[in-house]
Image (cartoon, rainbow, N blue to C red):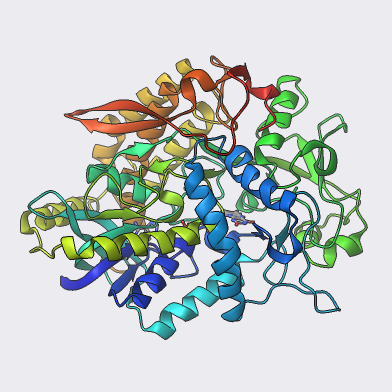
Length: 571
Ligand SMILES: Cc1cc2nc3c(=O)[nH]c(=O)nc-3n(C[C@H](O)[C@H](O)[C@H](O)COP(=O)(O)OP(=O)(O)OC[C@H]3O[C@@H](n4cnc5c(N)ncnc54)[C@H](O)[C@@H]3O)c2cc1C
């Protein structure tokens, strides 16, 4: 077993983790990045299709600047956000983020006259290279910056536990390099959790192989409070089949350099979503689309598993192909582009909720444990927001560091973690493999904790989780007991995190007795701002859990109504 010592250990190598590392490094603080995949090549960040421009950037008008802020608070977070954080983030994106990216050499797509191409509308966006593929060059740049700075990386290394100091604060972590099978203890004065939010917890999900809600489970076990865990986002128009394409979206947002974008039709061929008419802010219509789809499902003209279609048959192929990757998927499926539409289905996208943080410092409720990016419960997605967190957390830690000490590695906890991991490498009983259990979890989450929920299904899902714990886990084992490149072992480690996180998601879903944005309760269909414009906080309480509500301040934007049918609320 190796023991490493550093100032700050960062868990995750996506947009948030990378920028936290670069920002700490700039302040002279020593970070190390531990990443389950490869830094800059794992997690959700590589999938970012385009980059929203905020403030008065690139000729944005005062109205467009305001629209972007309104979109973030209302359509993207349903008011479950610290509006002061959103405002600071917008200013940083305008003044620091884009200029810094251009200076570092990220190419924003230009037209023949050399002007940066934007999408039109009330909210505008740009692309790095092409729309649909911006995250890849963006994260390649981050990887190069990390390597150039000489920031140490432990890659293909999964963090399996946080370690505590004698005073209860977090003072390091335990990890496994699953390629070599070696264990490493990283002792640090602070740990930043940056494991993202696109977890593969449902049958259909935009999350990648490594996204098993580890950050949530690790932070929870370390004693951190969580918030709004029930607030799950959905893509409504990802390709239905083949299943391996479930992350491939028929992008409904405005296209770069065109007034047009995708439209959606139901099983009867009737159009039910058209960007230009149906999305009031002309950007990020995910919730608007989801509500339109829910009405079709209730009318029997679509299902969340498919039976409805999306495509660009209203567009000239040249205008789609000019600046986007969107035609490629249709052609690869052998469809005529743009004449043919493709069958689409719902996919669990990112989770808005996560670890409860103070967004001014990114401190969690446990001293020594900080958060950046999607795994935090303070805001929903977008690569710019996740990056901003990397800066805020670095500032927060720079401020706190004099008070954070390096303690001795807790030997008993380390021995217990080794025993736990070794036990997961035993032989299976009755053929119960981690892949089988993962499938069970994803199916129950899809069937009972899917787009539309109710108390009976949620309670039944909790019973299923109980059965998995009691009946399946004791038999779970793996056929291959070697310790190097053993993905089955990694799957077994994932399973435990998935079960713990799913249980918390289900319990939080039961607790929020309203519908809000993408959170649709059949038994509580109203958006209830009187009672639920509040953070739904979940904490440990002895051997059980406790919930608390914390209302949000509304300094800039307000919903303007008390109670209303959620399907009739624009956002
Ligand atoms: C399909 C899709 C499309 C999107 N489109 C857009 C878009 O058009 N525009 C936009 O702005 N945003 C978009 N987003 C959102 C954006 O990509 C994310 O908001 C953002 O990149 C999240 O960054 P992050 O660093 O928080 O997490 P991620 O990028 O998810 O990074 C998480 C990291 O944590 C690591 N990790 C996980 N568990 C462990 C563990 N136990 N130990 C060690 N490491 C671990 C992973 O390997 C990964 O490196 C999209 C997301 C998806 C999934």
